[in-house]
Image (cartoon, helix red, strand yellow):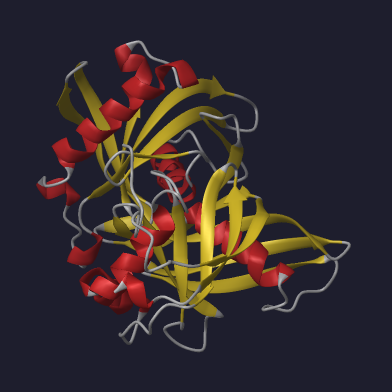
Length: 341
């Protein structure tokens, strides 16, 4: 258990305001032939879960903390694998984390890159293989484009009863399943002053749809369930494409400070299905803290369960915020930490 921890070495980044803690050393080996299998093993491991809690909770983290354990890839086709985690467990996908991992891999020299180039960093995650296309200018990372697994619409206009009134939600898969709700249905906007109301709604929508037949993945039950609720404000269409602002509530009431990477891919799939986002156009996707991702359709011919979806790409940037060696003093009464919400 955690009292045996000597040290955990991590590098912290933020992507569009959302933290991502890359744990590179100090945790036990995680069994499994693939990253998806290792996620299952991690969920069953008391020792590893104790480490996850230690890194997520105060005083080392906070309620909305995010990060990942570096693990071997599924095969030689990827540079490495990662298990994404947060305060409620292990997720199947994380776009903002993929952007941070790409920036870290090139900046650290783990993946060699030319001074002025775009370098693909291939990463195995529980939902499949993703690619961070890392652009360098003058030897420095300038931007990262996250190429996701196939994304697709699952359902349109699903009725949901909430404590604030009845709404309809769209369901789309972007490495994880998201429910998308236009907050204009409730007379709201995506602004910090509505944070508490949006958080409450996000939790209600997730749990209202999580166990529905629509939330069951057709081929892999490990991908079943609604991971997050994307509460968006539609700001209209410009010459380049749609502009939206969102607050994504993931897991059990955790709030993404970024526009949500895999959630942006899900929105790209929905807008493409509606004919609002075509080849060459851009989804300008802002967060509740006014950070931004740019979403595009990279390919519109991706095979998905029951039809054809899209390969979405999401452009953003991650910045290093710190290098850490975490310790747990066996005499510390706080132990693995605490959460205040």
